[in-house]
Amino acid sequence: MRDNPVLKQDIEDTVDYLLLDKQLDFISDLRDQIVSGLYNVLRQVVQRVAPTHPVKVVLVSEQSFLGYFDLMMALKNIRYVTVTHDDADLADADLVITTSSISLANKVNPNAVMFKWNQNADSDHYGRLYGLLRELWLQKSAD
Image (cartoon, rainbow, N blue to C red; front, top):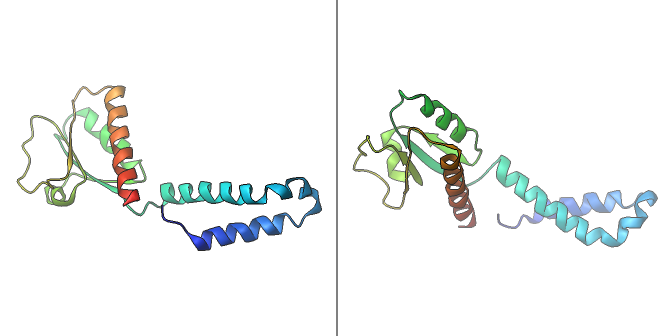
């Protein structure tokens, strides 16, 4: 995330206020480290809770197999992912998850990452997908 001087100032003010308490004198020498640590942690929390650059995922798959619901719910529970199954969203998708039996529309984003989903997916398949989603999110957040 980009630096947030307002958040940093708020944290500095809060830490300074807390350090006015004489019972906390023993950590007053660590003021700068405390401010830096809190600032970095809060920036990460903000990015995870309210991400500014979500990964756009289009799920192109048969909706009749039971694993479809598991996959869709897993994707919807990742805060930095927006997921849809609408062909119209293929044009600006970051990631397209598809099964081999579905043909894609011609309007797929040429920069989209393609991920083949096996209908008998195991936990390793979910792990690889999650790793890919996280990498895409980090790339988008750094831009």
